[in-house]
Length: 101
Image 1 (spheres, rainbow, N blue to C red):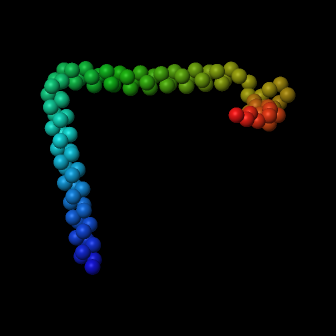
Image 2: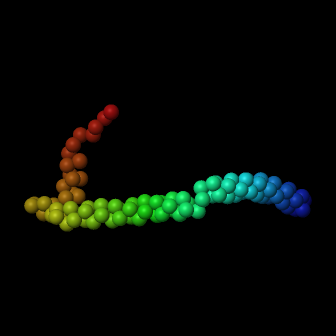
Image 3: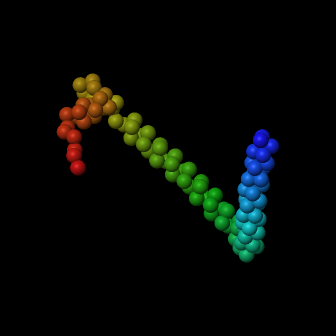
């Protein structure tokens, strides 16, 4: 009984493996032909453009975070009556009626 289950499992795994291998072969040859068609110079230019875009995204995120911290530093954390801004906002929300759509 156990041998039958292991045999069925093995044949199932071989079937999946063969299917995956054939797909990988197809994609691999397709990728290689695209790389040959593009050429190494254009591929390096594209890689540099992708790297520049990723670097620019990091810089933009850092600038926006720094700007947000500067704005947060300028605002007082407590209001004149000693209540924190968070508590004051929560109190205002409690007093407002719920919006129904």
